[in-house]
Each structure stands twice: as structure tokens, then as C-alpha cells.
View 1: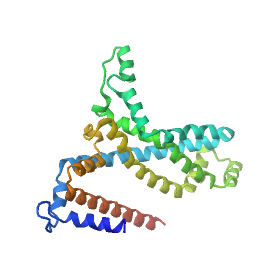
View 2 (view 1 turned 180 degrees about the vertical axis):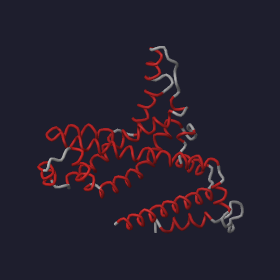
View 3 (view 1 turned 120 degrees about the vertical axis):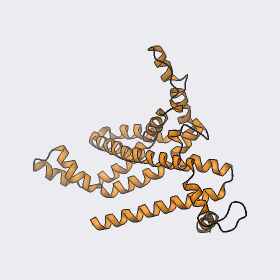
View 4 (view 1 turned 90 degrees about the horizontal axis):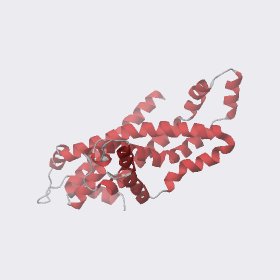
Length: 259
């Protein structure tokens, strides 16, 4: 009732004309595909996910391995890594403004060293700031997932490898990595979901129209919603949903072939 009916209404709107409400065929889809803002937002979103998700998975796995090796002191490190998750989004935005504002801490530091001030959020550096914030905010969450996967690997395997003379890299390659395949799929899925939540920070600090490098699909949908471009929003939603479903089916098919 609350999922299928609205989803069906979105599909119906995607094939409805904007002016008279009659059947429009693929007209709305053609308009969306040729829309420069949609192409920019889709490119930036894909770029952000392609950079952030592998980087976050690698950093969080490395963090989890270090925390696991810390043994008795692991509780302190876990708490430190999980603290960013407790920070409200508004506080993160305030931190951004204090550090990256044209009159912020970084620019004051540059001024003291003889450098010129930089508006970090109005140039390509905004993308790097967004990547750093995403990893900083979500590293602890993914670290906990990796730790759960590491706890599921029997310690006897490492002991046997130690007896056979295996080094740290060999243990990781032949025991840890194969044992974390299932966890890796879960971490990747949740990282994709969390990547869409970074819009809140980008929107609060840069508004409806941020720098082109961080103009995401969420900005586009928000602007279309404000202007009530319902048909465009619906067509774009159907396109994205189709792309996601096709990607999942292709991934499952390839994974089944490897199995």
C-alpha cells in the first residue's frame, strides 16, 4: 500500500505528458537523458561512488585489522572511530564552515604563511572535501561490520598457518580475505546506501546549486521537486531504478558463473 502503489504512480507519471496529462511515450525519458543537469549530476554521483566506496572499504578494513590486533586496547580505538557517527549533521556543517570557509582556519593558516586565501567549496577541491567527510563519517560503521566478519574466522586457521611459517601478508591473503567475502558484499551495499546520505552535508553548506564537482542527483531531484517537475522526476527515477536492477542482475549472474 505504501510502497507498490506510489511506485506504480511514479511509473505512470513517467509516461504522462507535462502539459495535458495524456500518454507521452518516451518523451519524458528523452528530455531527461538530454538534460545537461541530469548528465552532470549522474556523472558526479557515479564518480563519487567509484572513488569513495572502494576507498572507504579499504580504509575501514585496514582500521578493523588494526583494532583487532590491538587486543586489550581495542575498546578505546573502537570508541574513537565510532565518535563521528554520533556527531549531528549540523555540527559537521559547522565544522566545514570553520575549517574551509574563505575566512576559515585553513585560509588563516595560508595567510600566515604568505599564501592566498582559497574558497575551497567553490572550486574542484569541494569534491575532495566531500570525499574526506564521507569517509570520516562512515569509517567507524564499516569498521564494526569488518570486525564482525573477522570474529567469524576461526583462530585455529591462523595458528596452523603460523606453524607452517606463513607471514602476515600470506595470512591475510589466504585466510582473512577469503573469509571476508560475504562481509565485503554487505559492506559494499551499505556503503552505497550511505553514499546517498552525503547530500545533507553538501546541501547545507553549499545550497541548492553547489560547485559543479559536487552537484549530485539528490540536488537535481530536490530542485525538480521545488519546481514541481513531476514528470521529469518520475522519468529519472524509473531510469535509475532500471539501471540499478540491471546492475544487480548482471552482478548476480556473474557471481553465479564464478560459483
